[in-house]
Length: 155
Image (cartoon, rainbow, N blue to C red):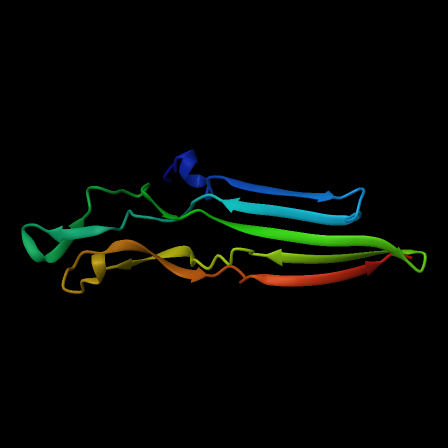
């Protein structure tokens, strides 16, 4: 069996979440709540370059193993982040606590493709070369900016 180095077994380098909110306690805007958050995902290993090839210098129509990479050379998906904003208001209505919330997720409308796999393709899309390189493939997108309004009543 092949012993994969620990730093390559960890698929995502780092993740982080931060969310904070504040409710105004006095004055004209009493019980108004403001919040903001960010979710960060570091770059992630989506494949390895052990099968990469280059054009054979001795025979232009053949490919040989790429000596610059090996089975432990990772292909990464770039890091990304999403943001959230929240606005809320609480009050008593008919002797029951009522809460109104407006939440906007993916506030900055990040829409980069999130690759999660690799495939072998010719470098630069040049089909005349026999060489192949690991290239990001198969992707999804983050959920586009979305807005949710909720109201809750406690009995």
